Image (tube, rainbow, N blue to C red; front, side):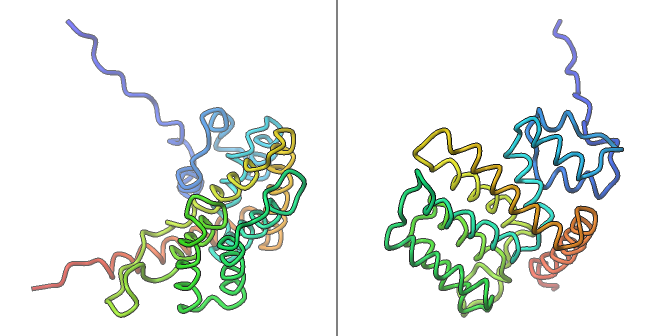
Length: 228
């Protein structure tokens, strides 16, 4: 006779709704998840993850509270800096062009620039940091379908996991292994400054949650089957 399956307890069950949403959004590592408690502030959680060298979780936490444009700017700055530092690899012609397209979108995030950025990201290679940043630009828009077709919106928050992915890949691309962790720390510090400029952790989380709910509503309306 086999033993009954045991359902593991939900580590997020005791969190307030918005904090649970944020943890599901940023997907911390198991070791980072152990530090998550109902009374932990985001500031203390971030500091604890950094102290324990859980840099990917800390970077994903920042990305989860940033609006699309700010998050993409952070990823763009990080990816560009990674090519310029000691141990970095100079960008190819395609990557250089993609950096320029992302910059133009950050300055003027209109539809034409977004689609041009996506084309440039494909030329650079979607597996490169700047290619990933360009993908985040594309997924931050209202439609991923052809320009002349009815809107086909991306799932709400589709860009969120790509921003930290680009940042972590940029840091890991350094040819000197000893530079990787210091680079992650520097990139995290840059992202933390953005959070502070947005009013701090709680304000940024609240605004991100509200933006996500509006995106969910828009997505539901756009994907609703036509009524007969």
